[in-house]
Image (cartoon, rainbow, N blue to C red; front, side, top):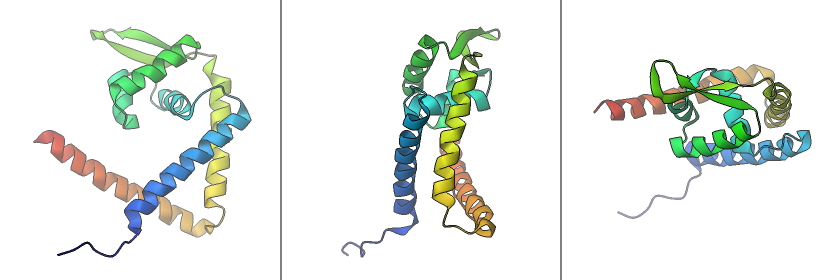
Length: 153
């Protein structure tokens, strides 16, 4: 039967794009001097987007293993950027919240994200950007649907 002809296709393009975006994000983070790794900055961003959530919810939202997230949270907590408090509904679970010290870093992370987004979209006409975002969201939704079907079995 043999292998098909090599083809970059959408999968490898998206994988390569994700790696390039991360590399650019890391470079931009170093310019705004957050002192955070890309993973830590991403974690702080998600805590901002999803305040007061359990660690497991954050790990799911970020598509990382819970132990990976714990490492990031440990670092952010030691830096005074987040607090982990006991969930009043389950003493074993921890809720994650930002501290006021996180605000300036979130602004710097936003600056880095905006720089990467601008550079990535620079050659795409503005009327095509919404189409691109919608198509990428559709791809993500389809993959998430498959994941949730797998969890239900």
